Image (cartoon, rainbow, N blue to C red; front, side, top):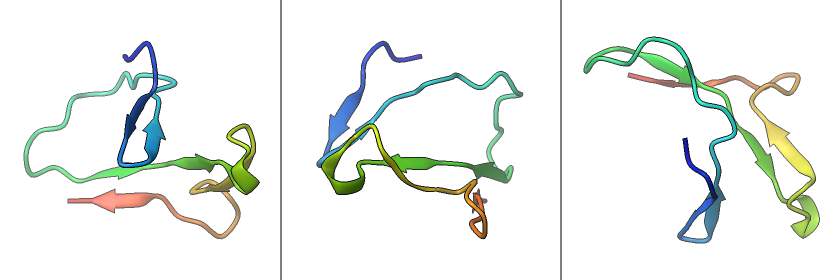
Length: 61
């Protein structure tokens, strides 16, 4: 887990909680939830999440 945020290409990411599931193996599918912050330039204010009503997680193969 990272101790501080990573900033790249104008985007900052921070791991808030490490997963505790099984590790992925090449060829497996997985889903990801995300939440975006920065509404009106306020990084404490959420503006979108895959868990919001009507939204879906991201699916990768």
